[in-house]
Length: 105
Length: 147
Image 1 (cartoon, rainbow over the protein chains, first blue to last red):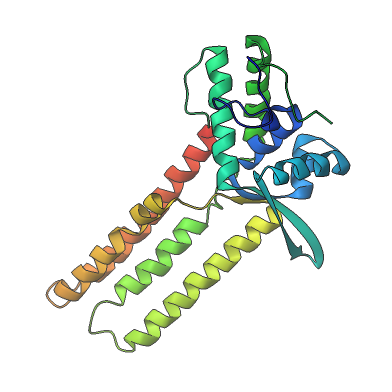
Image 2 (image 1 turned 90 degrees about the vertical axis):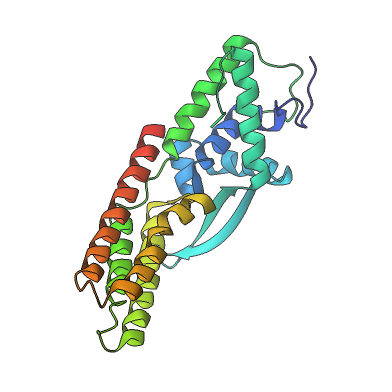
């Protein structure tokens, strides 16, 4: 079965790329996470994270907001409603492939 | 960087590996609400409930002070969350409604029976504190179990 970058039957090739899947998974249970914390928890460089976040933002799955903490400007990332739904559908699709049942969260 | 397109659906092994990676990352994003948040809300709301006893003077001042304390608790909560780098997910509307549900009942009971049952405001204030603390404990236990 061929798939594109667009969601098809829950599977979403945009999310499926390993780092992007991990970014979505990390953001899913939180309201928002600071860019540096995402970087630290996933063990990726800032440039790699930025590139993947840009792809997810382009797809409308992630939003980025800026805020000041300890006099320094910080970037916060969060999943959009669309991104949360797409991530859950993607996980459900993966579970279906594996043969599990679950809610995808 | 991975390409945006994947030619085919992953096989069972790849899908299982992706699920494992996602679960691991998801666990890293779990953040319980600070332990003090719900009890602090319970104390503030309980104090305001206690004020429903009509014999206590300066009602409005007391309620206004309670609202200010609630605002302060929220501010401290967000400051703590920002410091940790992860803002926990806020309660859904249904869960928020469930959490807040007892207080209108307590308030109405306080207004109606406050004169005849002098111990009622103290009892409802205490019940509110216990409810808020218990709700927070259950909520955070669910978050930790999900992790």
